[in-house]
View (cartoon, rainbow, N blue to C red):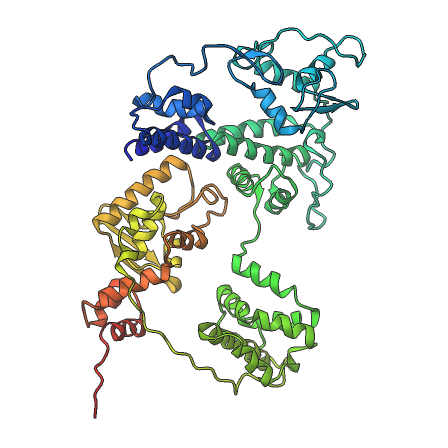
Length: 592
């Protein structure tokens, strides 16, 4: 519908200009679109001002629609010109129920007020007396301490109510009323000796209002954090939460010595007002000022394997640890070190069987061939095939390491039918890129549907390997292999659109990867785009990324019978190219 694109663009512009957070930005866009759609449904060219007055976030919606002439002409203030009395507190204003009374209704149940005898009305218990908001305010400001009803004078509320104190005055009074505390006794001083490593226990950290005072050096770091946020155009909510995270750390530890990254990550789960993103931004700020002791590099797969192996009983965990060490090339026999991802895949495939066996046996040496065969047959297809691969790896290596006397998987066989790739329907592919929701999602879809990249290849794309002048993008593959993509006009347009969006959202991000998110834009370890984000992009379109990639290769295979062309175009292996050619050009059946 005409006007929706204008609303979306104006909401984004105002969000960047005034620092609106995601909740306010999305709420404003929804209300503005709803008002515009309702007006068009009634045959109106402009939104009536009375609708904006009663709509949530009406002020923001008016600011978005008014500059484009989408609101009917009238005075700037969209309030009723005829005053009225609030139904609850009887104060004179412009609304049937003033905003404080609306908030009062949400907090208290309806009942009968003891003083004014009105019912039903939201009442609160004041010293055992049910009172409405009007009577509760009168009792609070009463000179004597009597609980008898008192006459109530005329008041003004809502937009007509006078403001006796400004927001700055309220903040000044609150700051003056806050008790002062001495600096922390746990400050890490320069020259302090290191005795031993231990995890910091944040469970005994006091509430924010009882934290120690900031030192002068810590206060300077807080101001530097605000300047750091302004340079990177963080919104107001993100800046506030990031500063709060840093404040808690500096109040307790101080800013004289570098802070361990593990201490920052251990703090987040124990504080409700701290989230994952702000912890990463605090880590990025401290790393930029050489005040961070980074954690040893640990991949997600390594952390997953270590965590799940430690969950088994001691007798099982010892044997699985020995298998992991041998897979990493640290066993009694020389082996090529395997990746943590391969170890994770094997362990993930056999984990249900290990969980069952760990409750029945004291060691893997007690597992029989029949139990392995039953476990493999519990699942079908590729799951059964990968489960047997994992079991063969574990039992075969443990026998070679002389931990197990035999390998019960040697006689177990499991054949699987390799399915041929099938094409997707035309209605599934029609308008696929246009249906993606944002520039990042559109670029992800194009890289898979046009250039047949898989998830890991998309995650590995880097900014320094993009050559806009030559129209190429180099893909780095495992074991040092590379593939050069020759970008078509559509892909180049989508890349340019994404780079403009990226610069507008995170102009000072140090992350070298082409595709990033708000989580990794300012993270100290500069992680690539999460794989879940890529798979979720296709799931929202009703597809799977590997099916779209397979359809692209299969479509190209239908136009040629040359495997070399497929190998050069998509960087696939010879068996994979022949697999697609056999699916595209099945051999005729010779009848005898």
